[in-house]
Amino acid sequence: MSIFQAPRPGILPAQSIETLIATSAVTSDTPFDHDQVQPASLDLRLSDQAWRVRASFLPGKRKVEERIADVAMHAIAITDAGVVLEKGCVYIVRLQERLKLPQGLIARANPKSSTGRVDVFVRLLTDRGASFDDVDEGYDGPLYLEVAPQTFSILVRPGTRLNQLRLKAGDPPKLETRSVGVDLQGGDIVGFRGRRHAGVVDLDHIDGHDPRDFWEPLSLRRGELLLDPGEFYILASSDDVEIPVDQAAEMTPIDPSVGEFRVHYAGFFDPGFGTDEAHGAGSKGVLEVRTHDTPFLLEHGQIVARLVYEPLTERPSRLYGESGSHYQNQGLKLSKHFRVW
Image (cartoon, rainbow, N blue to C red):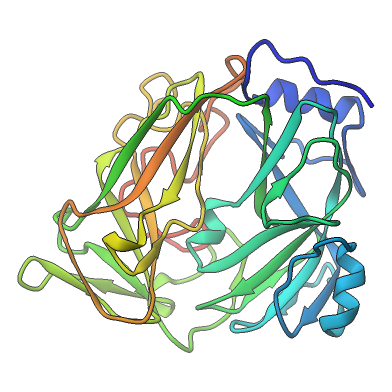
């Protein structure tokens, strides 16, 4: 098996990912899309093969499809016309991409930002994988995605992109960890709460949904925001987020002792996000928040997440937002599927 040589330990930039594709370390059922490689990640695409399952699982010492046989309720053919994945249900979808990682490379997956903002919980599975979202060096096999819509049912097709893969060489250092506070003073609307019993979100229909059918705007009372158990919220960070052009970052959960809620399903921030060089200065981090079992009062500036920075192996050939982005220069913003409020 080949050994990957990198200039230094770090996250692989776009040009290195393109080299992996050219050398068949990353392959696909269909030709790669022209915009599939991001500055420091690769978008992954759904195939036409899926299963409705009765429970989530980890493969352990078995292949994913061997475990699916134990928990599958029925198989689903995803067609070009689209298939609805219903909220409250769990699905396993085979992805179009396949990996043959050289030694010296590992990978980690995360939901795309647009996926997290519609409260769709996704996790990557690999054959004989011992954990979700992580891919060991030397892995040679298919990729699968667990998909669990929480607030809205979603319409997907072959090629729909719900998650992304970040590849890492060696053991790069953690350059910095920054606390992320919540903004509750940004204006008349400080956040949005997902409406129960809303319609279906077509994940390939950009700007195609009236946000008022899916979201309830939130304003402050007494300077605090009460999070109700089981509800889903879109909020913004109190400080601007900036990712240097030779680094990437991941939003990580806070310590449970700080608050009983989950923040930021979609954790990857690419190089150039929020920078002057990429014309993104003043960008906020959007926070996807779901409470657990108890109501929780948030105050302005309260720390709700951490942002961990790591180096790239080298400067990427392009920066976040250079070829267009729905989220560069963002403030409080719903996903790209919804028209402006």
